[in-house]
Image (cartoon, rainbow, N blue to C red; front, side):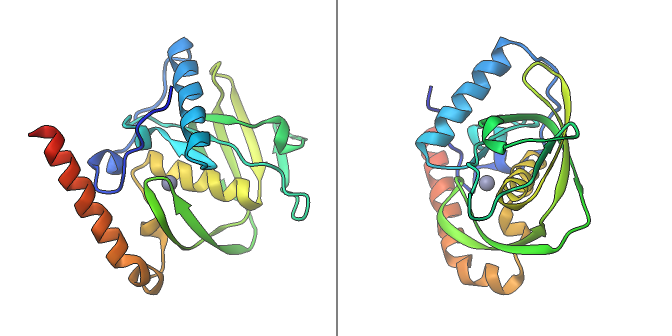
Length: 192
Ligand code: ZN
């Protein structure tokens, strides 16, 4: 089922998510719907806040890039990230690993067509639970690491615009404000 994606200006995007506690068929269905919604929107990650739930849960789907292969070590064993995708993460906790900081132009499904550079650690370790509630540790770099950091931020109400340098934010400020105004107007209409 395709879900509605919350846009910037919707207060749900600023809510801190509750921990996932039920690893049941409802969570499996939520995950399936979020993956379907993400694919339809041509995104590579989607957080629960973006579909209107303040929950520590997100999905990602990042293909391996043969030109810039991503490292991926799950529970101590290297593996091809394609075998993990799409990946659902419940209650993810990120730890930055020693690595260079990388700049990359990020987008977000809650900010259509608005992109800007964000600096993040290249390499992270994320501890999370899978759909069965089994705990894992995943070490990764490149786009997978970046996407997991972006989605985990969402679960704490943090948005990529909060991570941008002032000069980058300045360039997209008008688009961001316009989007917020449009979203609030649409929400008011719905409530009236
Ligand atoms: Zn996002």
